Length: 212
Image 1 (tube, rainbow, N blue to C red):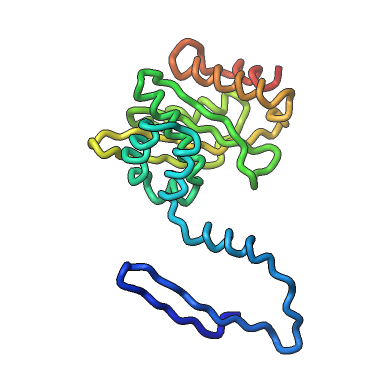
Image 2 (tube, helix red, strand yellow):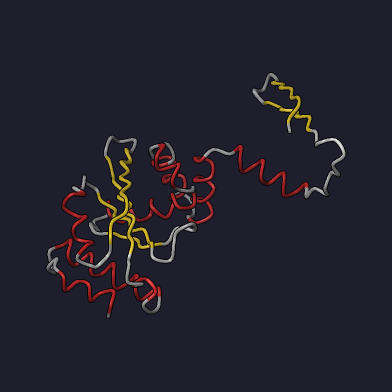
């Protein structure tokens, strides 16, 4: 437990926190992995924007990385930052950039680390607002249940907005494990895209996409 701490701030606006920790009387102090503790403290004190910027630089070269940091680092709403990592942020930004470039229908089917076997999440990326009341019934025709929706409005520095709709899906039939995961993702995304664009009907026959 923490029994005491002091704070010092210098003229360069740098701060130092000094904690005094104790253990219950009679307890043995275990060996401590100092490097691991330092890494955990560093991660805990970093901002989401810093993690995002590092992820962009790791995946995208200059000058594109500077542009994506300047245009998006401060644009994500707090709700998105609570639900996503900075690494997920650059993955979503690349999808949004494709949408802004003219590819209107971009999607991602993925599994959260703490999700159940019958659960997946599905992201829709748009350059204009989407009515969830119109899109959600689409998923029921694929034989999956919608569990929650997380809409995010990302307002860019130029005043324009792009949108991410993150929908939780549950299948009671084990459809997500019905074959190769990559193949299921490809088939499901292609089918949703076809229905969304009007190239295919939204009806009960769509259940065959995951059951075939």
